[in-house]
Amino acid sequence: MTSSEPEDDTVDIFEEPADFYQPEKNATYATHSLISGEELQVRLVGHSPLWGHLLWNAGRTLSTYLEEHAGSLIKDKTVLELGAGSGLPSLVCAINGAAQVVVTDYPDAELVENLQYNISHCSLLPSDGNIEVEGYLWGAPIEKLAVHLSKANSFKGFDVVILADLLFNHSEHGKLVKTVQETMKQSPASKSLVFFTPYRPWLLQKDLAFFDLARGGGFNVNKIFERVMEKAMFEEDPGDELLRRTVYGFELTWAKVD
Image (cartoon, rainbow, N blue to C red):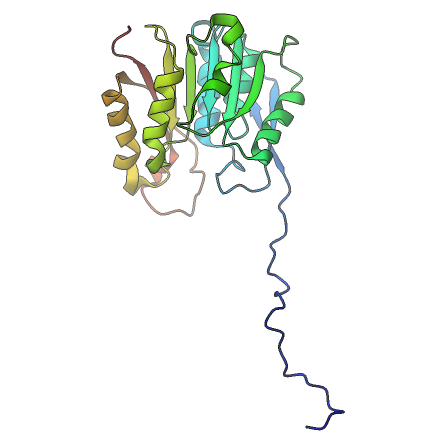
């Protein structure tokens, strides 16, 4: 090969392939129908390794359940949601007369900003600002959550704690139980609502292990809800289709109040 010939067989091993960086995914939107017939729209982040880019079936069904029982569950109550994603259940609580709602997710800037966006763009919310956003890591100190209620009740705890489709995080069950223990008000009327679908049916027993930890942590556990959805969220996934279409709801209450 002479010096005048092009050296086409040379390769720059430090040059990144053209498709090395995946294009950033845009945010999407989803709607939820309220009992009143009004449509509540939420924005979902474009992509999240924490699954915040989806509006899960448990979040939808729990939102309807909360609305149906707003008089006894929500009105004038304080509410905390963990791992909220789009924050749909929290928005429904705020719309339906909760005294104060604190909606939380992993302290990632995009997730927290998206929750704030959904609050800022929800025209159905009351004008008294009864919902606030906080980035929160399960099992961490709760001071940043307590400050939202400290003026109202010197932080005796939240009346209602919401967990929607979080049980697939098996390694985090202990931290979730710890957070519920520290944030749920010590009162016979207080409760945590845990709704989930076994998206991986072969791991159902690991999902349900959360409730064993909860019982060991001082809670009564009662099943209060079951609904089979029209179709599974991930239709091509393996495993029992009926289980993958079913949303289960459980209620945690204190076994003993100090």
